[in-house]
Image 1 (spheres, one colour):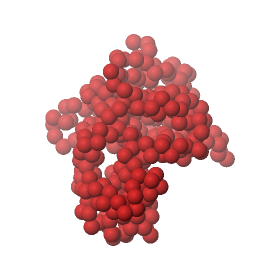
Image 2 (tube, one colour):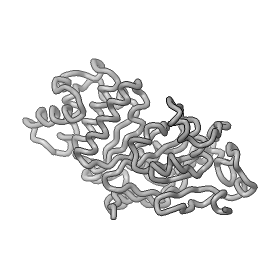
Image 3 (spheres, rainbow, N blue to C red):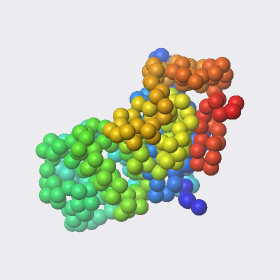
Image 4 (cartoon, helix red, strand yellow):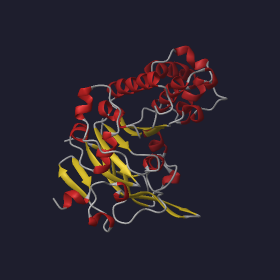
Length: 320
């Protein structure tokens, strides 16, 4: 039986604004198994990045349990232990803003080593060289500054920094969305190789479903702060259940007839994601759904079990 590294139950994160309460994350449940890549997918404003920021302690949860290796890390998020800060690392979307332009690559990658007392001062340069080699960068890059290297190389430096503490969980928050296509492929291939070498666990957050097909073990779709569908990757792409999932999959560009045949029937995108301040009644997706029934606008659906590893939150399956 696979071991759970992270377990989230009834997790909510609300923000109070001048316009009202924003339900950024609204009562979600999921687990991430040791050694897997869990893909969290959604449009901008769905709440997926908020999940990441709570896990690394930027915010505290409004409600719910966040169990990491059996320890509730949501209780005292402002005084997180150094062990947790070491064991959960994050790679942000924009490497240009996440790297200090006044520090060299050696200083940037070496900072976690110094902060967590993982290396003696005389050994830091050798460890930084090892980390740069691990992510596919030349060792002499340690003497460069962020302004002297490209966007993809900056992201590889950010990944090296995240790996410096030998974490158990690495959160990848849209790590390739700011890169060109060729650099995206290089970074993704490097992440796959690193995971195999170190037996890492990834929480991969993205809006790009095409990335998930070859990278994720399981995929979860998020919409207006809620999870709509969770499934193993093969079931997710071959047997999508939720109308929102089907809409997203039918919108993925394809380059061959074989790929086109694997897509759901054409289900064109309708409308835009509503404001999380004014969430529609019932199912939040019903104003955009072409398969909605009367109940959809009245009751918020519960997550239903399709099989052992496939779950969907939709009234269509409660009445079937």
